[in-house]
Amino acid sequence: VGLSKELELSPLQLCLENLHRTLQRKDTQGFFAYPVNDTIAPGYSNIITHPMDFSSMKYKIDSKEYHTLEKFRSDFFLMCNNAMVYNAPETIYYKAAKKLMQSGCKLLAPDKIISMYRGIG
Ligand SMILES: COc1ccc(C(=O)NC2CCC2)cc1-c1cc(C(C)=O)n2cccnc12
Image 1 (cartoon, rainbow, N blue to C red):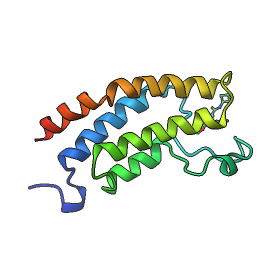
Image 2 (spheres, rainbow, N blue to C red):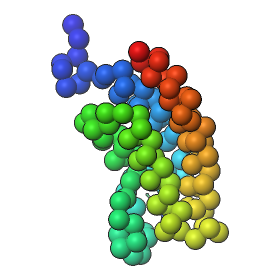
Image 3 (tube, protein in one colour):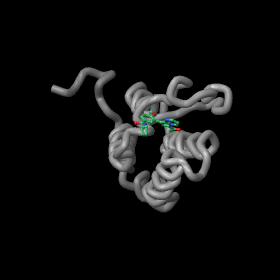
């Protein structure tokens, strides 16, 4: 007896859930866990036109908005880049984003993506 249709996770979704979990684990302080708002970051919505965070990415995985690994990958780098645009280099957020981006580069390297697609088959 399988899960009802909408709950069934496709191989791509399973792969994205895995990547998402691995990447979010690196955000130990939770700076990227949910959307940044103007209260904690004054003027944020004027400076960052395309906000992104791990909770939004999770929602997109579950609502099957990601049809390719590439779209997931670009949202991840958008999230890191936003933090490096809004925050000055000496801030904890800029440094956290840089570190997170480096982990993401390794995990989401093109050769890794190709071998994942081979795995999904
Ligand atoms: C969801 O976003 C957050 C959640 C919690 C915290 C947080 O715990 N900040 C405390 C550590 C020093 C205050 C910061 C942030 C945060 C992320 C960010 C990002 C990602 O730019 N940010 C920028 C300015 C001010 N705060 C933040």
